[in-house]
Length: 334
Image (cartoon, rainbow, N blue to C red; front, side):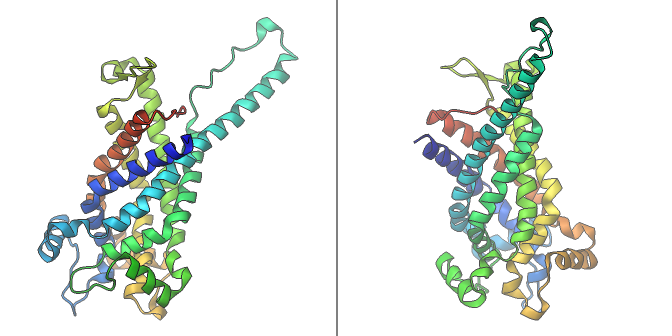
């Protein structure tokens, strides 16, 4: 039952955060694939700037169109976040136990040489190292990414459609047409670049968030901003500190991995817009963007992406912590 609760907490957190920031996500994706879907024939210019991109989406489909593809996003984000948080928390336990075991063995060997008075004090093992968090986040990210990738691909394709140029009538129709036209492997188009984004992105995000959380809970500078758990009496992050730690982790991970994200989005939709002989590999996509748009082309869409970081990551960690409190899920040390 504890495992089910933990999965539920992660799923609810990810789905809520994704829905809150869906308009920013759509603007980011349209900016990233801008040059692939802009054609003189159709006079389409998806998202040359943040303001004009926002206006064109609303003009062509109304306010509701800002959430186009969000149903698929939530269907993807719920299991993705659930698997992510679940594996991350449990990998932390496993890695921490292994580390403590090694320390115990080392201590036993050392005790044979030292007298009782010379032995170093035992470590309480309450905190996990940044390296442990990074490894746990990388493992969680890769497993969740592979498990939920087909939904991510369908979501991206639905998100990049405009009224009048729809290839799919919805999620089910998209799955049917992709399978018919591209086979089962079509659902994994762009998986390589996606892993290059998801693994370091989540590893960095979990590491920074967890490390900042430990620092904030231990440092008296943040005493007045912390909350006290009514039952245990232990300090915990309040709204402001959770938002700050989440925003910092999300911003850093985004800046590091954004160019890879641009390439993977283009890989996900090229089968839809480009004839097979002209399709590019991930490396060729990156080279093509740089040649045509300069290095800054790899950062197209960074503005709305950074604008969504604070509400996205902040909401996700905030809802995750709140849901765990509500369901009385034990919180392993981060």
